[in-house]
Image 1 (cartoon, rainbow, N blue to C red):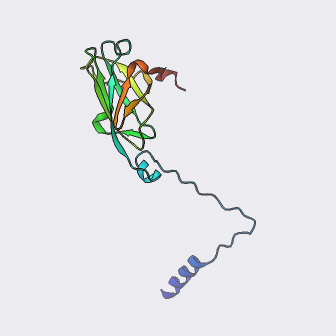
Image 2 (spheres, one colour):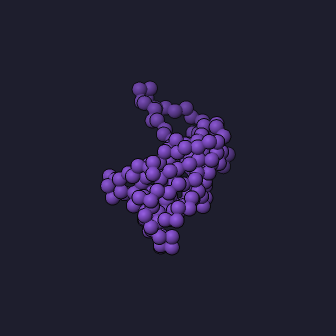
Image 3 (spheres, one colour):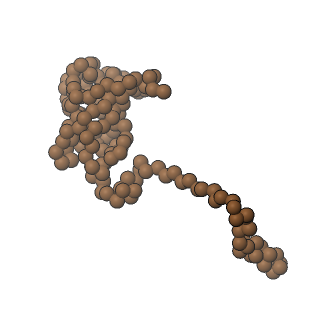
Length: 152
């Protein structure tokens, strides 16, 4: 038994006997950074609250919005979905950011408040204004991007 152990230990400690001209095989590691930007960048995350100001031509009878994560921010829990109705009530998004964003992306679909969940239509690109941790998104300033069916 000791003999087998010694042979096994010798094989583990045996230097690599590959030819001198062989190239090392590179190792590639890819890590998701979307959940821990604070650790990756060394910068502190802060919570921001974005008030959505409706626009009649985009909202129609109702508009469901979903915040799409993107550096330097990600959405916080229930604060990533908003329904904006024709009564012009302001809705809010809650996001955690390394720095205040200058633009955010929202997936959208037109729907009444109690409409069943369904897929969104496409994307809105919205500039963000703000002072401190209170941000403002005016839907009238958003650019409607392509519908999802047009992405390839």
